[in-house]
Length: 271
Image (cartoon, rainbow, N blue to C red):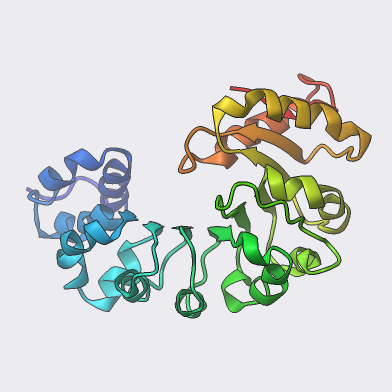
């Protein structure tokens, strides 16, 4: 049977279907050779990786470097310092968004410097809360990051070290591509005011509380903000799942506030 559509349109149809409904990819792979070539990369477009998953990725690792660069776009790694995860990450130079859930080592940062993600989520070590930004945010890794999500190492919970704009966090203002910034509330509490004053390219500044059980704390934080910060870009959010897309919920809130659906000094984005 001769194709009904142009090859470009046919490819777009199959790729879009694969992205929207991954469960049909195995069926589409059997349609014909050209569809197989278009659709197979969609199997690996989004990867959630832990050390337990590494053997299951053997099929992907056997592919050519060109295939891996074209296929893998979004990677979430449960990282515990294992070199296997570092080695795997180096095989995916086409990554657009990257989450490192765990303590990152200098070796891992060196691997990540070869990547150019536009979206990055990473832990900030609590023990070096002041030294970390100056030493880390100036790395090549951050040169193209537009969406940056930084959250403080959850251990130890009683760590009361404060982030200081003057002692290192002012590096945020020098990131050339940054437009969307999300900080957990413990970081935002200390530096939210200098951020909105100095990061003039920011479109969104989110202070995040990582559990819906902290709703009252988030509401109090938002109510107290107008005394120090008056900026329409600021949003306070509670998140039950870190992996959820924080920008999707935020964008609609910002537009509705600009249109007058919320008071200009309403900062809390509720459920």
